[in-house]
Length: 347
Image 1 (cartoon, rainbow, N blue to C red):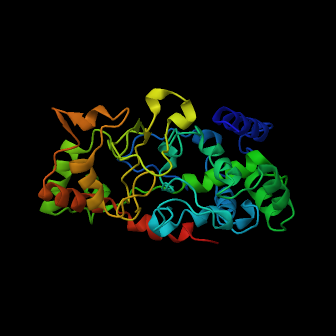
Image 2 (image 1 turned 120 degrees about the vertical axis):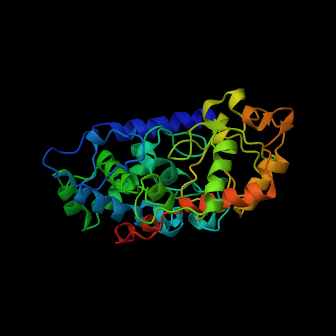
């Protein structure tokens, strides 16, 4: 099946799930589960259509940790998204799924999703509410049919009352299933790192001289792509990696445009200390290796980003001291409160 057919199938699945989609029932009681950090921009997710409630959050959390979403009950969302590592697949270069099959891309962190408008390394999904369908239906991740998931959930005693608490009815359908997962994922807001406290002038918000020097170097050399308080401009770029292995064409897998070959989503750097390995295929296991790539090993591949080929040289000019100080700064983006928040653990 070619890529167009794959995309068509995905759209048909999505269309089927959207039939009958509706906003949360008006009698659901909103709780303050989503709070925008004061130094963050406004979220892009339509919270007025699906604002997290206590019951919706609990339902979404139960679903997130439930292996029943996969074909044989062995793989839950949490399999590739571990809280202690900013909801990534720790120490796995690419995702490992059902039947011990191996995927082609590194699992991206699940955090601050209310500020994202495209999902996955290639931006193949444009709505958080639809994002779970991709791993559920992927044959090497969860390998289940969406309709089967709903059938199985209807047969599990605990779920009808949880859906009733969340949506006012015990009817389990695709839209409510996806909305509940979104409600849980929307609450995964990481905005209490030491850097955030420094920006907001809160207690505990101190940075060392090395970290401040690293912030200055970061702003001069890295913020062209990792911009703003989310540390990503949410764009797709070719960052000059040596093309290897699967020869993944990235964004072009979705758009089928030559100008998008080898472009991947610019990831956020929040909690980057914990989200190793790095890059779309998890080829680098340390921040030093990442910075060494940008300083010394950027390749002149098709569609290389203009920011990595300026002034007659490839890459970013970085001294060893620059790298050391930038890494010191990046570690101030670790949000221990988020990584250990007991609300997000398996129920």
